[in-house]
Length: 134
Image (cartoon, rainbow, N blue to C red; front, side):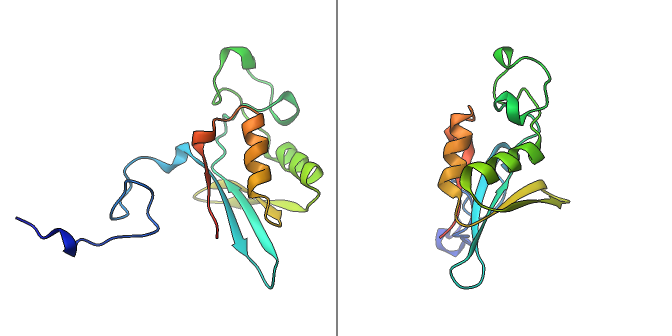
């Protein structure tokens, strides 16, 4: 018989994950985070957009047709996607290469909802997008 209240609890762990151990893979989710800079300035990061995200033809590398594939069917071009974000949201942004997470898109300002709506309009399921922040 074990005592339940002596287990460690991580409040920042994912849902359904009591002690912070990975239950599933986090590679399936697109994470949109906001980070505080100095003063009122913020930075929005987009990570986890898989190499197979299916977006409209302006933002993708043209592989198999979009009609026969789900949202993991076509490679996206992060440079074109960043350019579209910058033009649509009227902000500056950059691509950051990370060893663990691959390419991360950083945008100035709090663009979480705008990015989320943009990705949903492009056909990525809402259940795969995780919004983080204050």
